[in-house]
Image (cartoon, rainbow, N blue to C red; front, side):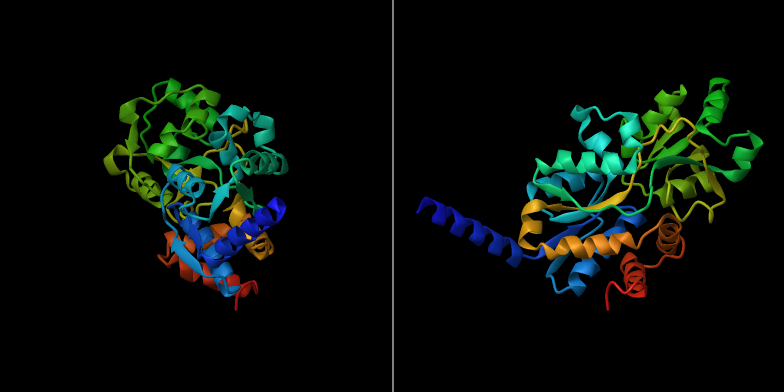
Amino acid sequence: MKKSVLLIAAFALAAQASAKPIVVASKLDPEAQLLGQIILLTLKDAGFDVTDKTSLGDTGVARKAILSGEIDVYPEYTGNAVYLFPEAKISSENAQNPKVIHKLAKDLDARNGITWLNPANVNNTWALALPAKFARANKLSSYADLAGYLNKGGNLKVAGSPEFFNRPDAFQLFENTYGFKLKADQKLLLAGATPLQTQQAAASGQNGVNAAMAYGTDGTIAALDLVVLKDPKNAQPVYQPAPIIRTEVLKANPKIQTLLNKAFRTLNQSGIQKLNAQIAVEGKPARDVAAAFLKSKGIIK
């Protein structure tokens, strides 16, 4: 009798989960908005009732929202396992292996009731971009070059978000790996900044800025005549985007896994850079760019 009651309760919870709209979120930058809309439009086309909460906030905001059940699914990056699970002490070797870091993220988050679906074949690392003219004049092509330049008194002012400067796996990782340290007045902190905003500041020299927060798949770098510094010591983890979803919601709607795995499988490095450029450079709405892309791949009608 007790077993029957438990089964009925389980079925009731599953039915309740499948009846609610699926809340889709994303972070703030153009790629996050693009990926969030890819998730949302794919689910909507398949007949799911969805609620749009894309452009919700930074990693911390999105993370709290999914853990609390405020949102159900959003695109996250495998490399963020280093940041999200510091107690796991993930080695740099593991963090730079795409399959290993995805499995680690998946296994570590399963205990939180969150399932990581398959990642796209894309690597969106944290990076630093410099105006090409400035980089050429000072022979800066890598973080090793930058360290030598700064340690000899070279001038640098970086525009970035608080997350970029404060996270140990972002700008601090470059400082610690390559042996340099910026002072407070060498950082222009822009709350909620996207790479487009920081890179525009560097390209225009706003407030003395000559370097900017960037991501490996930004579509704005070439358009603004910037160059991304190379990371010869492979300090950065691999950051492949993957949909992460509350396991309860996925169990109630198992079709979602096949749908989103198929959608993310169509993405690649050069392709996503072009899509990002349509949003960040051309000013097209993320939903329109995502819809056109998904239709071209036969994912949605």
